[in-house]
Image (tube, rainbow, N blue to C red):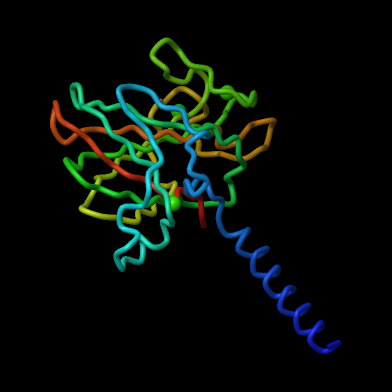
Length: 211
Ligand SMILES: [Ca+2]
Ligand SMILES: [Ca+2]
Ligand SMILES: [Ca+2]
Ligand SMILES: [Ca+2]
């Protein structure tokens, strides 16, 4: 009995050790397994809802890793633009080097524009003008095509993001907590249609920062 206790203790120790080291390799923004999109805000004519994983029953490695739920975004394009979603992170992201996301394309694929905001005036806020553009902080952007049908895993190095507002912020990618900065303050995703007027229906899942 005593021996069994020691074996159990050793197994628990190894499991905890693995969890602790896995913890250091990525930061999970959201995998929607809570069946909730409460950490996200939306803007523009887009509808956002957590739905069951449509490919869960099929044998697909990415689909399986997407678990039971993903976030579905749908809407009608008006002059290419469909709207988007965002979340405030306020995170020191200086030890990460890329953003990973699983994208589920179904109809009329279009493009996904991913935007990262780093807080440059050290006040843990993104002050914006009347067009929702930052006044003092950097905004970085990259556009990726939405492929399909089914899941595509996309891993984008931060170095692929381009400063979207030269002359505003310090024009340097510095998402750390130094000088009172909130670091990586916000993540936004904007959906752009393939056609000027058309429908979009996209799923996203497993949004994380990694090395
Ligand atoms: Ca999921
Ligand atoms: Ca700021
Ligand atoms: Ca800038
Ligand atoms: Ca900056």
